[in-house]
Image (cartoon, rainbow, N blue to C red):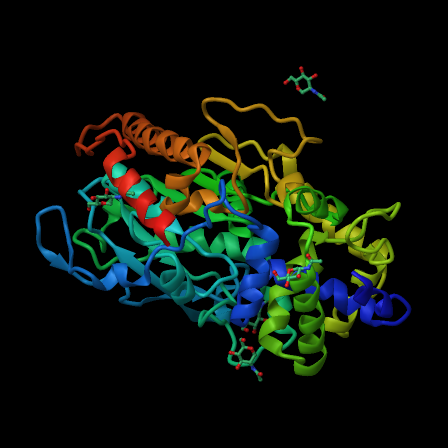
Length: 462
Ligand SMILES: *[C@@H]1O[C@H](CO)[C@@H](O)[C@H](O)[C@H]1NC(C)=O
Ligand SMILES: *[C@@H]1O[C@H](CO)[C@@H](O)[C@H](O)[C@H]1NC(C)=O
Ligand SMILES: *[C@@H]1O[C@H](CO)[C@@H](O)[C@H](O)[C@H]1NC(C)=O
Ligand SMILES: *[C@@H]1O[C@H](CO)[C@@H](O)[C@H](O)[C@H]1NC(C)=O
Ligand SMILES: *[C@@H]1O[C@H](CO)[C@@H](O)[C@H](O)[C@H]1NC(C)=O
């Protein structure tokens, strides 16, 4: 790691910090950085088998049909929704947010499964892992509950920009609060292309809406049920990073514990990223650190007493300085102000004390983010029926795709649990309504062992 040393004594420390933040926060990177991210957050393999990626050919391999066998629009059809720029002032107007939508498993009265990829553009998600199909947890929940799936782009990512240029306004409206209200406003106002999708029947008081997200969006999943009661009936929160924390040196512990000792490639990637950050001054990339500079923190600093794989000189003050430079005139380099912002987010969203019912929580033992999730050792939160918490042998968000559930039994178990729990929660919603207007199919899901072992054989061969 000696290449880090040359940075100790100059302002590039801040940029190095930025680099590690960006790597983990931003997915909008060149393939080599994608590789880096995987090596850091999903370092290693499951029992010698590399984590698989679902083939992107999946969506084109067959026409999509509904439960009656009628052909419906393909997975890759992009829909648009007019979203409010400012939920505190509707007269600021609207902007277009993009989404995918399928109703292949939908029966009238079924839930709407809303998945947001958070910082990733929706099309990138669709290519890499078809989150709209049953190869992902959102699609599988839809299949198990006769629900419809929506994959909605988060404001400021992909093509869902509120403003033509990315000025300082980006910071003002790029907040957790506005983002949460986007999903609420969507649920209350969207007209979906599916049959009945333009009526009152799909509104949250008539049909259960289920929020699905991972990482930052996993935190949104936990927050939204509590912050906006009566809108999202249930949520699936994978690696939900719920605990704002300015100085997050614990990040590196699972990395050290589980990463192969040889991290040359990672070091190189960080150095390249610093160069990128210096050279490009790219506005788009800047957005990826907005909510962490303004609300959530998670500066992946070095352990306070040294001895980690990251220098102790990479401290929170260096981050504060970086943020002030990234948002000149908006954020100062004061660590105290920084702490105050993070404290305010903690007070608003409650961190480990977030307590809503019907949030299904999954974390991975080998996830560097573990210690700011609801499975953090320090938090010591117990699992309950209405808020089950699973700690798997997986990585960051590795529970969200079926290919991982095949190779790692603890993830397979999470899939089994999710696909029996969500149908139960959906029928609880219908029970709550005191109506049996619609019979929602509740076929219990079982991981098909034939499919699983066939897929396993394929993965082993690859
Ligand atoms: C609301 O937005 C409009 C249009 O941008 C602006 O003229 C008005 O001053 C805003 N109101 C408040 C209270 O910020
Ligand atoms: C996805 O659905 C198809 C049928 O449409 C089924 O054959 C397959 O087993 C399902 N996959 C999962 C992971 O549930
Ligand atoms: C580190 O890994 C690279 C690539 O796998 C390899 O070429 C190199 O010899 C390794 N270095 C050490 C010290 O193991
Ligand atoms: C900034 O980065 C984004 C995402 O990588 C890219 O699409 C865009 O073209 C870049 N803009 C500039 C001005 O380099
Ligand atoms: C964790 O919580 C349980 C009760 O839920 C308690 O018995 C136990 O002592 C706690 N452990 C720590 C380390 O606080």
